[in-house]
Length: 326
Image 1 (cartoon, rainbow, N blue to C red):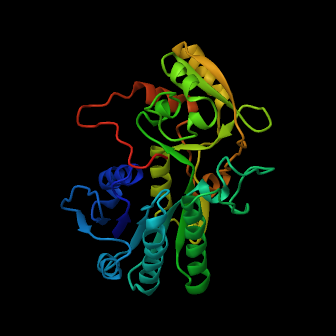
Image 2: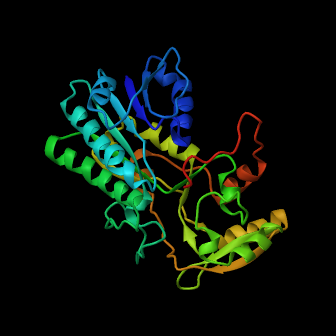
């Protein structure tokens, strides 16, 4: 087994590398990581190649002898990079994959951007057959196009593709800072879009937790997954017969309910909830298919995610640096 990984320096890539290399089932397997700006550490079983996904020669080189592709590289709201990296890069990988004599499986990590996240309203839980509806922005568009491209290569050429569609991925202390009112906030929504900057600054000085309300006035429900659970799903999907040419939602069993989060932090951290009306929709990403077909079960619920985030202590060698804001 030889796995090509794109996006190996991201939170999922690094977590997968560690889990895969430690798994006794894959002691003879090798990894090749295509890196551009950042690099992972090379080793006896990890080959690091510097290059761009938009370079046909670089893609052809890294695909030599590869049995599995794990495609995680992405660009966020960077219109100048979207075509070269997200679209051209995906096309070059798929073209090389369909012509390969060694490839067995192409795994894509997708995102719930393809179904609109909290920006689009769904009358029922979002399954793998729900319509794709990107929200505004080039990143969400790329997530839709990636899913469609691999789907079409499956139809046109019989490619063994697997898509794992994940919502917002949490690790370390991410969730704690996703709830912060301060300048250290991780991800969105940006509070200044919902409340005044002055109010956000005042709240940052106290022990407050946002209790966001959806467009109907109910507590907002938003989908998350812990990186450990996503990596477990990846490991489960590798060479699984039920994963062939399939799309799976990989998320917590239930979306995070901001009222439940607020109540838990009131009880356990003596924090005070702050009601924040939003224009967002509560959505439920249904993971039934992955649980049934892959035998996968997420282990981290919202309480465990809170406990892990609040307990995490960063070392001086592990500064909190956000490459992509989430």
